[in-house]
Length: 578
Image (cartoon, helix red, strand yellow):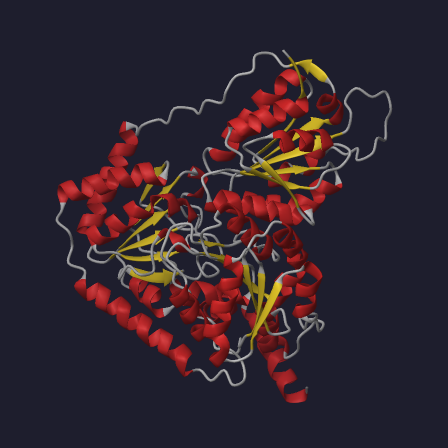
């Protein structure tokens, strides 16, 4: 059967469940775009920048059962998209990146966009392929999908030369996609699960630490916590893995960078069950916490075991499959624990911590705790919160309770500024009946704000809540103590209302605590009409989060003594002389 590579690409993407693609058409991929326009399953979306498109595809994978996909031009399209691809790569998010390519039948050299693209993406993808013939297209895209979604997920890149897209060729046998059969648990893993159950049953103060890899096992996670009487803390990415309205929810992080409930839970822990986490820098508060000897670690990637913390029992595999078996063992071997005292302790810690925010005088700015309280009050449990990289990230982690799995997404290990606005747009696109609110700092917002034009063009009613203080606050605050000055962290004056006018979206300001409730209500009402909204919030960043305070202490403590003395001395000198 003779088909063009463009037709074969569309067919293969439909077969693996792609619903949306993001990118920009150019001379090397217009045939693919034309085919996508014929699809009854896939809708292609034009973006303002391929980097934004990467964040949008990433968010589709995080918040839906479909895989996010990009269709981009070669060379500049790839380098522009690199931040979005790399975010997915380091965060373990599946993505398909379909790129056009130069002709592979030309006698000429120095063609437009001629680069070794496989070498270019080598460090930010799980795998990369260049298709040479028509009969490789479907097989390669199926293989790319399997790699992207198996093991620890990640992005996979496929280059398709433009001449194959234009010309018909022998496609071979065109077969539908068939997923590989899932394997059961081996006897070795069964034994490890039995040993893990025994450790948890015998523990006096078990604690659970959940990452992104536990999100799809959220129901099992709750049942295990309630059965053994364990407090639960999460990584930043894993915030939605355990509902904050469960009395055993302790918060985000552990160690000195955690809020009191999580910090106290881990201080007393004699056994920790870690699920779907790599114990990376943000998750551990800059590696500042300590864990007991009895550490049970469940993860699909065996490379994470014993990497930063010594493991007593490591169990490799899918968290849902393993936690299902673990829960079964626990129910067979022990009664439900009495966790009344633990629940009361967590509740008391949370109440005192929240009160410290209420007691903080925000003067003429908006108190973050009051903003998040009202936002939570107005949103349903199905709402989705999308954050960016910055001070607002940890305010959200500390103060915004999330009640359902996949209700909170964040750029984490690559930690790329500019993520939230495009990601919120695609999240709302895929979940039109749910409230979607981006929480983004003004600096990060400025990087990708023009993607709001895409939201306006497609009637995508996301609310973009901009925490506006005129600085790159996470870094400017970090500069203030050791340097007593702010270098390149004070933003130029920009009127966000002008961005709203330029893109055609709506604009609402919050200048005081008294304006919070009405402004959020009005923003949500406009969003319900398919109108994207900039919610410009005059935020107070003067009170640092527990995370910020904790990592400053941890990193200062870890510094070599001469470096520590030099930094402290410089800070004192500048305080006196500046």
